[in-house]
Length: 184
Image (cartoon, rainbow, N blue to C red; front, side, top):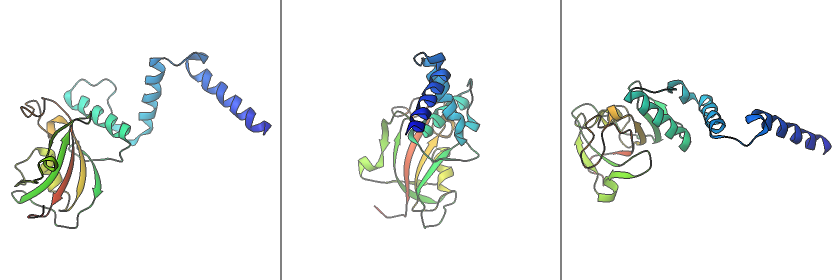
């Protein structure tokens, strides 16, 4: 028991000496701690310390979101992050093929900007007629898949945005269910 008390005291002293020389943590100390946590994440390899381009800002925002939410995301070569919640058992679609999908699209703050679930009707369109991230997902994942897509603005609605729904240069999140045609 004495050894465990000694270890706790040594640990406490070590922590206080590392944190601003024993003073209360400052915003700078907290920022450094957050940065250290990010560096431990495999996602940090794509993080830019001083982002200047929209792509870098979007990438950082998506990485921050994924880390904050504890998402085990994978990144495609295009820069889209994704999580497969359920892998479908259907075929993978090709460009020009009709599809239907249920989805909720939302901002990084969680605010939903559009949802087929709320309308009670899945979206029906053709592969290639959607934003770049959706088109990529539709030709990558089999029908029946349930996904979370984290997309930089250039793979969503870019510098134009989607008037009335999405402001320009906005990274987005989509929960997407690629459904068999005719299913409700």
